[in-house]
Image 1 (tube, rainbow, N blue to C red):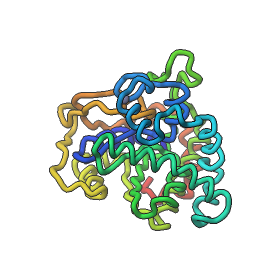
Image 2 (image 1 turned 90 degrees about the horizontal axis):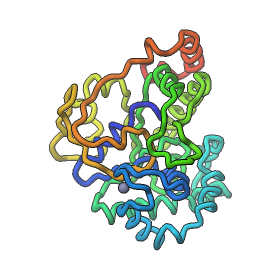
Image 3 (image 1 turned 180 degrees about the vertical axis):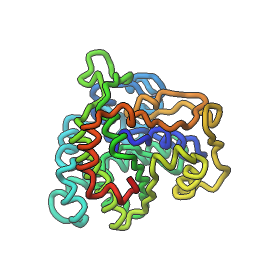
Image 4 (image 1 turned 60 degrees about the horizontal axis):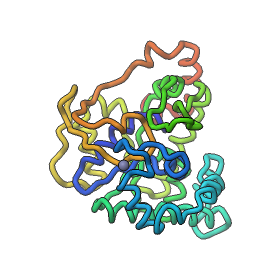
Length: 299
Ligand SMILES: [Zn+2]
């Protein structure tokens, strides 16, 4: 689920040789193509040469895509409400499967184009929606690897409650701030998203679950596990506490946490601000709502 500390992990993955991190592609269609928001390189989406090349190879130019149609297609399949059908149906049957097939064809073309333009062999898409992962499972099966980052639901609820200006938003944007959820909604989403990723793992998608708290406590060891899982065989990234570890190079991640604009040295620090910052009643609410599955992840 968003706000689980996955942006840093995604960016670190992008530093591995042969890997390319492209951000939350699920949002590219609207925030990139319609709103022309800023890419991770700082340029407006339409001015970024990387994405121009990708659009050219994938679709013969972004102008050839009917964006409104893509958004309608997305809305008709990539939603939490379709998760039961996506998880339990089988590929090739029914209209949901047909819509998923059309929808993931867009992603397949895009990933293939990214591989060609970047020269990478592993593409990291950090779209958080379990519904997109469920669609992609039909297309890729076990060729896809799922990194499931989970964080204490009270920390996640605290983060979703904060007001954060979106530095990516263009003037006049329909989304000047990052979305906010109430504590109750955040807790319910936490249950749904995490349970759905567990369900995908049970259906044969190679999945690695990483707890944010374990990652910040020992980034070297946890990132080593992640790198093994994604097939990296070279030298480990030098990750320690504090600054001065890995140098993040720029990148072309679309959408996601404002941290994607950061370049230069980056350290891993635990953020436990929720322990003081989350109101006691909210903490009790989230604790109660997530009780049925929280223990599965050690919370
Ligand atoms: Zn860019």
